[in-house]
Image 1 (cartoon, rainbow, N blue to C red):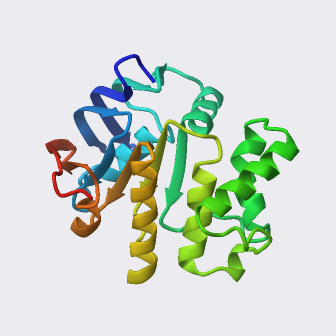
Image 2: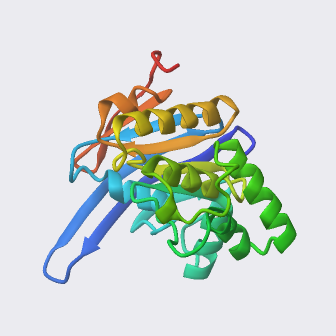
Length: 234
């Protein structure tokens, strides 16, 4: 994190995909700052560029042009291995499809980022158990994802996202595969994390989810068209 509390800083970010026959400009000069303690919803229609923006925010990809810093790390020009290290240390991911490994336990799934981060085995096991307890799954440590409901799997994913104590939690349509009740529970958990001081960014097309965030960033045709504080956030 930089001294002024800025976790993410994007300046004139462009992303161009070259298919060989045509070049598609997905992002067209994005300027965005995200601060410690923000709860940001990034919204926009299909094809607006929000998925591309998510990939850049999460260090899953690099911009074609512009400057991007996360937690004080300059992402421009880094190698793939360096990008992966920054991603594992700085970003916790929550995906619509959970992205859990089906043949290992909930606890082992939560341990994975710490395994890649070089955390000793005993410390990994202890922290994973603590995090699963925090999301209400302290009695499901040994259950495999196939033995859990959709809402429970997403809670495992949230615990995994917290494993490395990242600067930012990035969630892509986190309730997209959940029923209404489970989706409400997951959003309540995000709200609790935000109130505890976490910084969250949610990518969504659902206006109801966006209204739970403290800040809403609207994107259309590769441009940010509106960025405003949400006074209705609980």
